[in-house]
Length: 305
Image (cartoon, rainbow, N blue to C red; front, side, top):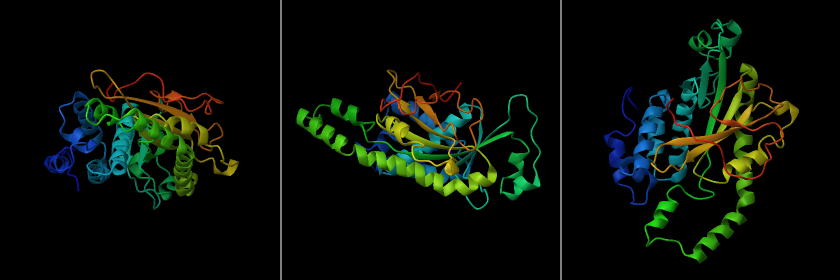
């Protein structure tokens, strides 16, 4: 269990990273003097201060040798920082009526007085202290789906020389990527569908906006697929997902940590997002959610104002 105020990359974490292979992303992240690794470490340390009861689990996941576990913790931590950067207070894994979604985000509406708690709300399992200090509330679930296009360390590995991929190998990889496109599309759709199904009753009871964040790291395919499948088969009675968000990291010349993302809102959502809920992200206008499989675009932003 993590101790309050303890560093994310503590001695135990650094020792675990040192035991991993030389091409391990965990080892690179925790130990490398690469400016990109240094900036990402600092950003994650900042995000870790908001992890609350999830701190121990997220550290363990971040140091995992499997990419899926590692990327999941990476995406979760960056989502916490992203929410705080945009003015939200965050509670990790809140106890809400017997369920614990990843994040409860709270924020006072501009110029509004805090709303007092009511018996009906507390009966739903909402922590009373949050009810008395927040006007706006939002549930957030996070899932990392990355590595479909290119892994974040792949380009660096190729530049080293001996491990450089041949044209035939690149062509084979391209064919494999194309062959798996439909399977990847089904995977993204299944992730969105399962999360919506799991929290449908809770969202209905609390009548709160519900957002699913997909973290794609430096992938180049997930955003386009999410645009295609988000809300594509939702019925009027199941519009409990307010928006799907796709975000990830972008390359910078000096290695600085910059994020980029977009909001795919459901115009028919039961509980729409409050205005300016995610001001740093590009919101797709109505009718543009099916704009094709172009990668994320737009300016990057940091976790600090």
